[in-house]
Length: 98
Image (cartoon, rainbow, N blue to C red; front, side, top):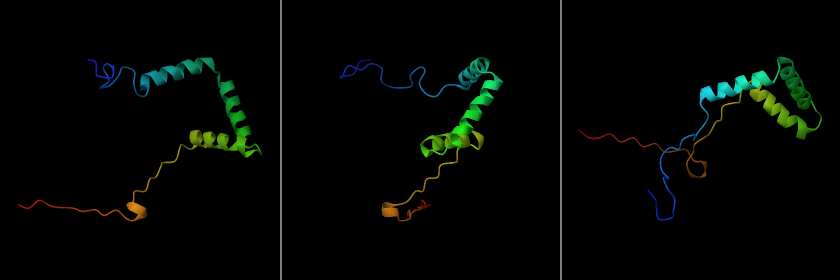
């Protein structure tokens, strides 16, 4: 099907779109495990920790952020929903009459 502007098949899901599957991620992880030894992984963590302890905030802050994200997990994102100009939302419940 061709639309007026020349595009074809522009609706619906595309093959390969979206996040990789769990099987693909675990396959990638297995491949990386064979390429990087345990000693090299430990050295990478030591290097990241050394960067986190650097006196330069341009070096330490990204390293601290990454280190904390992996060690403690990323914090949940909190979004506050409010009305216009920060006023509380008005919730109206209407019941159908019998």
